[in-house]
Image (tube, rainbow, N blue to C red; front, side, top):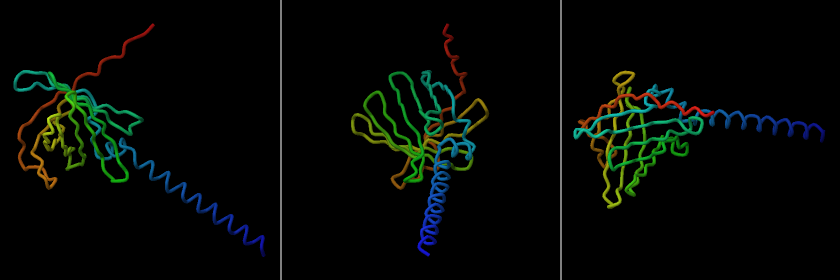
Length: 182
């Protein structure tokens, strides 16, 4: 009878361990940012983009996959200004988050969420002068080579204003070819 108890306990422990492995493996597979982006149909955002400001300045924007699609790096650049960001899925909050730093010492944080066929970034930026601005960036696909940003005021409630303050239209750029080494 003692042998039966040991066998049942051992079988039970193996079954529990197997269930635990299956559950955690499934959860890890769902926590990859690339999966969320693909499921939402937002793969189109990845790439090199360019726009021109009202003053005629070139605005560069790059969204690039990193770390086996667990993160997107972002670069936003125009004369005298440069922003870099990391975008990743934070499972403890079940949110896609962004952290940002700029070349003037400012920092930012935000969250991404889908709104129909648009990707919305709700972002708070604090400049080196300690002034904080809150904005909603609504990303929409116009066509395969055109993306539009509608920039909205972001209220303290976390809601974005109904109407945008301004719009920027970006055109997709060809990615530079890697240098050939001999």
